[in-house]
Image (tube, rainbow, N blue to C red; front, side, top):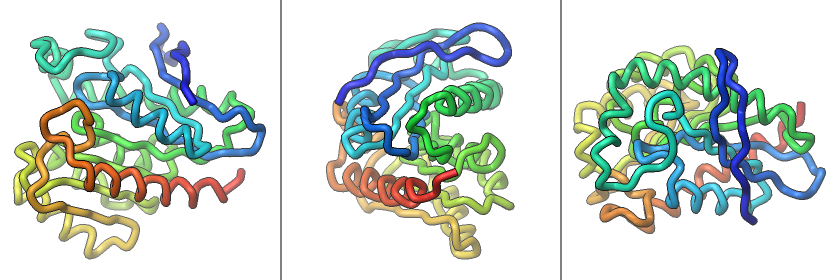
Length: 234
């Protein structure tokens, strides 16, 4: 199953691209919104989207960089770092895009009203912000970066949040991983999985750090969370 790029209208004006895959069946389905890594909605993100779609889910992957340098970038493109800075401000601006993407999903007849956000690297914070205040029913984070800025945001979140890292991830220092592990021990809805010997970017098939076992675990755990949302018909 392959999707297509649709235009999503931004609440503050303008439109942005969003890769969208919806099942042909009229049966209600949950959705997963992919918050991409710094390279945008590239071949790796499309492969993840199409894999989820193969399980009968609705999948959306918005271009979170449309305000600066739009579209996917290659791994050696020097503009990748430029378009993500200042990072905290860019993440904050992207919150509106995640809300607008969810609003766009609400126009699909198959959508059951329940969506999880799955964030990668740069997009990792949305796995927390989505359930916290953007209307998402769950969050999954894969090799999220600079996540120390968002640890306090988990307080008060009641939805399921799953975070996965490798212990050799240079963007996730040991003290950050320990902080999330400590919080997970106190919050039943938060789970943290840390894989030994795994590097940053393990989800990206074309990248040098791709790890099949960690990738497959993350996809499987995400599907399990989404299956629970699939039974929650609004």
